[in-house]
Length: 169
Image (cartoon, rainbow, N blue to C red):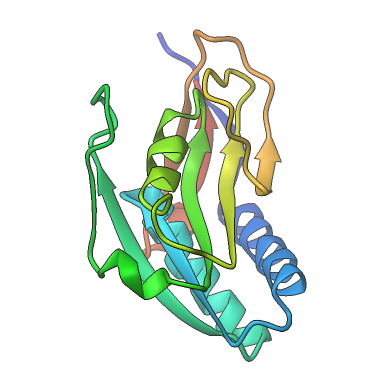
């Protein structure tokens, strides 16, 4: 039987997102607007929550963008719900829930390579220690040393946040 170990509960997840919001604000305190781009599915949920926190604590205008991509493709196949050109000369923050190999985050970053940006930063709620691609999140909720056979499950529910959890199994 597969055992699951609770790594983060609802309040810890919210604390991580709040802390990341303050770090993002500090790094972008003079910016009038930033674009937060969340990778489907839970990266986008985290992006929405980060947007809410940033709007609560700062005067920065936030544009929320959704990134959909084929995580199993051997090449970049991604789309956004807003035109990528809206990011021109702005700060963009790409968000994913868990960084494992780094492929998903690398693909997410790839969408913005042909657009001049002020700055590109990355966020992950959880970072594992098995990267294949040379990407690391600029802001991270929790770093977790795991063995390759272990799996990190992030569960986020905006309707019932008390069910939010991160498990190691």
